[in-house]
Image (tube, rainbow, N blue to C red; front, side, top):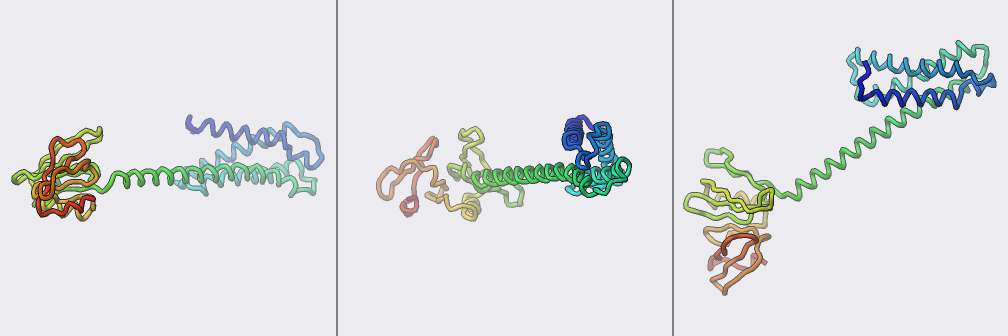
Length: 252
């Protein structure tokens, strides 16, 4: 049974066949008159045979989404009906190939349409995939933190992290959430372990103090004098101290 969503496609195809048979009447090539009724019969026969071929494919569990099974009904039905109608209406004519050419054209145009449609869909899907991959790249690497038992405890996009702050046996992660507001997460993990994992994914972070691992991309200002520097970070509520033995040039 024809689904409603496909009804318009079938209607357009039938209209194409009917108009083509009436406007470019295959019988005209033979100088035998217009044969309007015969052309209408031929159009209905082509359409009906196409539906029959599709039905057989479905019953045979053929992959009806493949290009071959999409094209075959368009290709076979006009040519088969063309041969049959020739022997029914024009068996005394010797211009068989001229007559069949019309039906080859009827088969050819929908095939080209199917091919171009599939090509367009493939290109569209590739463009979407490239866009998604580009979006993932722009989001930056994902850091998945796990405890000593190997259980995942927190994950965050590194380019959203402002800094990590050690607090006894815990680490505070300050980051921008999906609404671009600062959020904070606390996990029982060492700052050294996070530093090692971050260094393996990004070169944007520096351990400026025993208690702070900062994202250089969020540094807005460096205050103080030699051996007593403090960093201002974007939207961060306090200044970050810098260890005396840290080379401040690493932040340039």
